Amino acid sequence: MIWKHSPEQFRKQLFDIVSRKQHWATPYFNGSTITKMQLHIHFRQEYAVYIRDFAVLLARIIGKNPPWEIRRHLATTIYEEETGGLSLGKSHRELFLQMMKGLGFNRAEFRDVELLKKSLAYREWLDTLCQDDNWLLGAANMTIFVEGTVNDPEEASQDRPPKTPAEIEDIVLKHPLVVYHGLSPEYMDLIRVREMIEPANRRIVYDLIVKEATESGQQKLVLESLEHSLNLWLEYRDGIARACGLRA
Image (cartoon, rainbow, N blue to C red; front, side, top):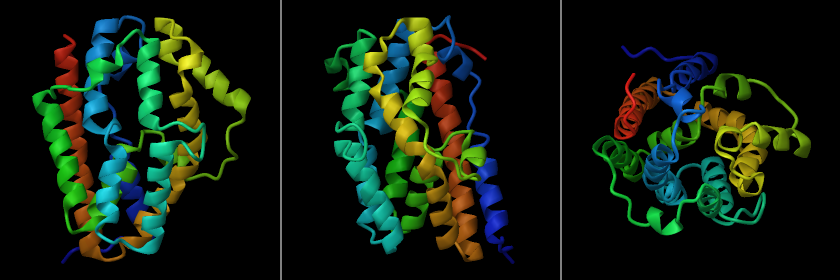
């Protein structure tokens, strides 16, 4: 018999998985010793694995005809990702490439990226999830895991007012790329947009998934798929770290 979680229990299980989305190399990438060449390897993999095609992956889930509330959230996210219509008027992909330009990386270097072995495995898993007839698995993994961070348990549990422009600028000025690599804040609109949009979204996505995964079998499949995403993500980050010459 599969145990059915209450909404509160299920949400706690989701938080537990996302709270483990931590990798040993993150302090290196956010620190002062990482080189521009290592950042180049890292960002090219990130771009090709999910940043470039994030809206495309979400569109595949919409094609499975999930309930209206899910479709609405995914469609709104696609609109913002592709147009910046809810924030600064530019696609998130374009804002990412502008940030890369500020670091001295040519946009042409992001056109044909050869994925590392573990990067490819993680991307193929995301493709599989978003193409699966069970739309709930794709929606849960893309909105909760891919967009989620270790801060989700806190951010998605509390109602907080939107950050003020001054608060967002303070975050930008303290960003590791600005502090350690001299990236001009003018290239940091991607970070501004994320601080404008994402915190408010975190509670919404958990509410939506918890509302839809009401059966014990659904909850089990969601949790198992998220655990698999976590394992593949950790291996994917291992692969990038090794390619950068880093060791745990």
